[in-house]
Image (cartoon, helix red, strand yellow):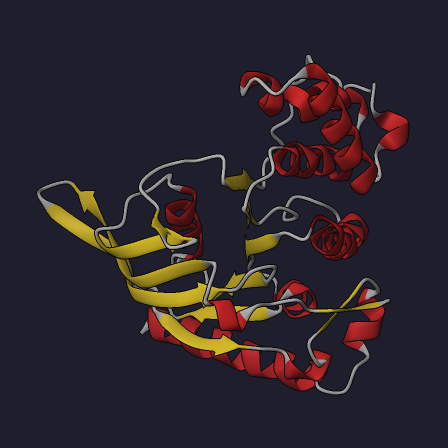
Length: 273
């Protein structure tokens, strides 16, 4: 099923990354430069995927957006407010499963709201909304040890969304899943993005995943990471699809996949050289 890809370019980017660089200290007063002079914007309700060769700084960019790292230079802003640390406005889903083993699915989804003082009735209603959205209604009283990896990741997504973030950040969220579960989770993410009306920034190394999910791909160069190219998958004609095979079969998919594979190979080779 196709959905229009809703962005609001006229209003300006929701997330703005402006000339951002990051250097990490090394022993003997030396430094390593992870990313250099990175600039791009993410529109309201957009799914933006950051892609590039291993070690190009994809996760570093995402961690700075989350407020978990501080840029050495440049500015990151959300809704025109500078990002200076962590905040509930930015919810993060990691590759590793982060459910609390001693809480049920419902307890996990309610956890952040309970810590933030959301009244019982409201947090129950919001928890149920997102449990339903990630298709775990039958498992709401089950504990994480009884869930598959894909289900645990759905719990993490529901828990993050229940805190009503302006921005959903995802760092290789499906990387630990088997191929079939990963495919289903990708389709579920499209459905969630449509129904939760949320803005998503996601890091992946998987070209197929990036093309299927993204309204926009930010491709970073080899280390130090710079914006090599910003790609809008025009063959999708501004739509999102909850059937992955439909996208793979479309005219233009194969050409874009080959283009990105060439870029990945070229950037990987430049890193070696």
